[in-house]
Length: 339
Image (tube, rainbow, N blue to C red):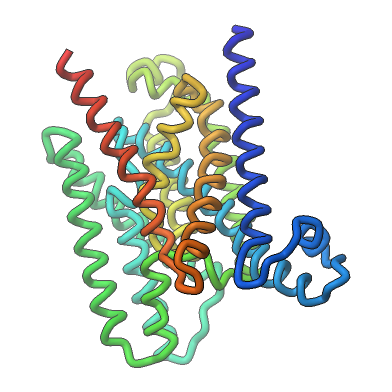
């Protein structure tokens, strides 16, 4: 027992240190280099150089906060979906849920801009949430028809492709300059985030993550089978509905503010399970949040700096790191089946 506690403590400390390192690297690196001391004072608007305060407070800090919050949300959403479907490679991006949310957001923005209406952050999250629920509903219907989880994943990928194709078609033929700029968002990016967006993210993501953490005990029972969970007094229908709503809400926040971000929701929960040597939701949910934040901070730094001043989409970078993890998971699963 002591060994487990020690491993958990070391794991959380390590994750926290990595997240802090990438947080400050994102603050100091860019077109204008800033010292760590100036970046620290700039967070509080106390730097002697006023331009540093503006760069940190108005541009880099909101972007860092977005990467942390949305990365954590995406990882928890992926963990919930993996448990809901009993599939280790289930995730918002893989199952097409992010793409469905992206499509509804794009259509909503186009419709509102043509009417001369500027939608706020909350409205964008709502549109994304509706898109996530629609995609989730289709996936659940398909899950009752297919014979195995591989077919479910393939179906999710196909849904994602269809939604992405329709979104690209709509964006390509849009007339308004603001709508044309949706192309960058549709590829995935943490840029352009402001303080109002951060406040909405904080409310939605922290509330959703806290609710997911409160489900740790029934989720742990659910991992051992529906019958076992039911015998412990878990209301399965209400519990599954909670998983659907929470995973959809968390992935919707990501899509609304950053567009689709690939593979983080699949890869990070598995990396956390390997790091901590357990699949207990009580440990993996907070670990996934911190791990997802660290991974997205790292990937966003690479996206900004690798070919500066040209910026890569965040999904391009996350796919490079996340796809090999998914392949490894599939190989491990096949080996276990072969035994």
